[in-house]
Amino acid sequence: EPYEDKQALLDFLNNVNHSRYLNWDGTSACSSWTGVTCNHDKTRIIAIRLPGVGFRGSIPVNTLSRLSALQILSLRSNSFSGPIPSDFGNLGNLTSIYLQSNSFNGPLPADFSAWKSLSVLNLSNNDFSGSIPSSISNLTHLTALVLTNNSLSGNIPDLNLPSLQVLDLSNNNFTGSVPNSLQRFPGSAFSGNRLSPANISPSLSLVPPPSVPPKKKSFKLHEPAILGIVIGGCVLCFLAIAAVLIIRYSKKEGKSGDTEKSLKKEAAVRKGASSSQHGEGNLAFFEGCNLAFDLEDLLRASAEVLGKGTFGTTYKAALEDSTTVVVKRLKESVGRKDFEQQMEVVGNIRHENVAPLRAYYYSKDEKLMVYDFYSQGSASLMLHAKRSADRIPLDWETRLRIVIGAARGIALIHVQYGGKLVHGNIKSSNIFLNSQGFGCISDLGLATIMSPIVPPVMRAAGYQPPEVTDSRKVSQATDVYSFGVLLLELLTGKSPIHATGTNEVVHLVRWVHSVVREEWTAEVFDVELLRYPNIEEEMVEMLQIGLTCVARMPEQRPKMAVVVKMVEGVRRVNTGTRPSTEASTLNLTPPMTGIGSSSVTH
Ligand SMILES: Nc1ncnc2c1ncn2[C@@H]1O[C@H](COP(=O)(O)OP(=O)(O)OP(=O)(O)O)[C@@H](O)[C@H]1O
Image 1 (spheres, rainbow, N blue to C red):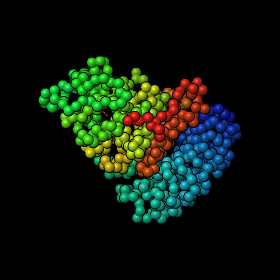
Image 2: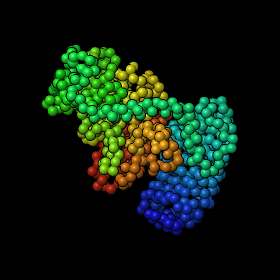
Image 3: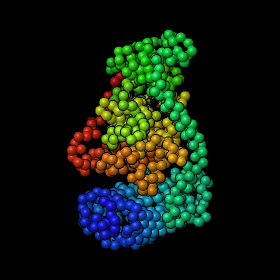
Image 4: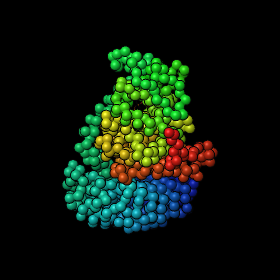
């Protein structure tokens, strides 16, 4: 509703019991919070956003405390003063508090224990004083703590915040040293204080100590500086790598769609020799595969290039009996023994969320892998292909199914072979829809057989976590990070590395962090999702799961089995609040098979 004056807003807050979101942005009609009593129990209101509407003065006690369902509270960019009212502690369901860019003052709340679900706390650009209470360690779900540009002082307590990924304590009056638990954060998180430099991360050297601490309302101006510092010296290197990858990608895109007469003909051209000598045995099929063709049939099939990936070229091959399969022709690979061993591992995995490897072939000149053809294309294609007015957007239900299926597939992979198996190349172009419309992971095993040849950092720019600098560092936590990037990609509609209008190269994980930190949460989501009603809660929950998966430190990322529960819980939790017809027609959680009791055939 367009609220035009303060009275209308007050009427809303005080009398309307049935709304779930209150968003009111951009006018300056309000002056004081006085009169807002919220004297009804509006248990359904889950989000209040009143940024920049001109409020000033303090927030009296008992104005919001009855909103027991409230999850998101944004009062940023007003002129509130005074302390945070003590009864905010009653709002035990809060997940995000944005009070930045006001003139709040006084100490921080002494007891944080009530905010058990809190994920984002942004109190920056105020005048809070005193120290950080150690009770903040009770916020076990906190992912972002932003206290920059206040007058906080004393020692920074040793905070045990396992989920924390964004920390900014800069431009305060903290003294002492950076505690052990926070030394993983970049130096810029602590700059502009009087801290001993001894144990601050070396990146501090990139941060010129500000001679005059930035003052109120300077946060947005300050933001690029912080980002610039965080990215710091990496940026040039990153830009160079990204440019190479973008050029490569566009070349690759350009190639896809080329048609070729047959794989055999192409092989002959490639070898500059007769193609009759493929020699060395035939295709090895896996149990349960009812495809009936041999190598010659496959090589004779008319083939269309689907794309050139990191490991070789992928073809859609139409056989004479009208079967269509996908053939991956690898550029090179490890030796026969290792190749065959890995193919046996992969080919024997049968699970609805893992694309089955149907057959393989190995000879000196030719290494092939045969898969089913997924006619709808990959999640990447569905999400990013030709964004135009007549395009049918990838709807929210399909995105949820992709996420849930992909999570189940990765979790299944992670319990194979004594929990030692890693995918190593999770990305949206390797995810397809299975017959039930759920995500299904392809390319298992390729990263392993190619790791001596193609290092992981060269493979999936934007999907690889910071610790992956060489192939030995790939672990299941790498897959969790890549899955988190996939989740963010599906929520934002943006590629893991994308260029902005100003040709600036943006890293999706950093971009999402910066947007969430600034409470532009609504802006984070893909505009194509805005047309679907009642999904904001689910999107916000998915966003939080995605951010948990992309935690900087591998040991802080959840295990994939836990992620499965989290993503499945998003819809289960919310079915009660959705229209019953809609909820009952969606079968988002068919029984999970395979995890723990996998249906692997040998
Ligand atoms: N079984 C399949 N069915 C339909 N399309 C597929 C299939 N397998 C791969 N593709 C598509 O073919 C194209 C090339 O795939 P390929 O796996 O070679 O490269 P990639 O996924 O872009 O990168 P990478 O090699 O790192 O996995 C991609 O667009 C991919 O989504």
